[in-house]
Length: 232
Image 1 (tube, helix red, strand yellow):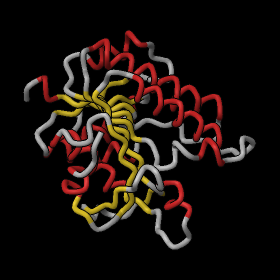
Image 2 (tube, rainbow, N blue to C red):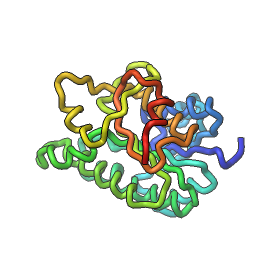
Image 3 (cartoon, rainbow, N blue to C red):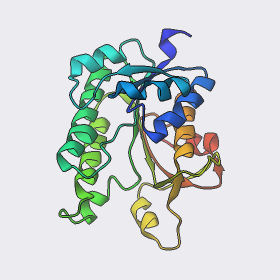
């Protein structure tokens, strides 16, 4: 496999990352997954990826640059998991920003961020005293920093994540009405994690949705067709 086709997944032991690794491999990429715990290495190997131990919470930009050098793309699928505001800020915002800077320094222009569908609107609607607010703030800040970079980014905004198998079909939300749609009691906001993994793979395989935000739910449109309709 050519070095130019290597994809580095940040947060390689997360549920979405473990689903994405074999799909990316099947699509012709080689996958290297960054993990913080060496005990996670076997799971990474079983998913068809190469594990690399690097704690992104403490890794500086230089260490990340070294990890990214020669890659085709970086996928940021890491998250602190909530519950600790300081760690949420450290991982979901600060480490994310360092990974963007590192990708640029390493000469890796393609960058996929796994965010969530309401990252642009929750910052204005969630109570700042809510335990969810630090996550909303961190993702909002990271996403907007990414938009200000020169990277060929794609920001993926799924809805409420589920463990359902991939349908291979999604509905892309209109950015102008995504918050309203997500708040409607008549709309299911579910998004299969495996569908997210399929979207990551198709985004990198086809080169779709460059410098675009794709907010989406499980739906009825085949993923390649849905992504082809997204403009930057």
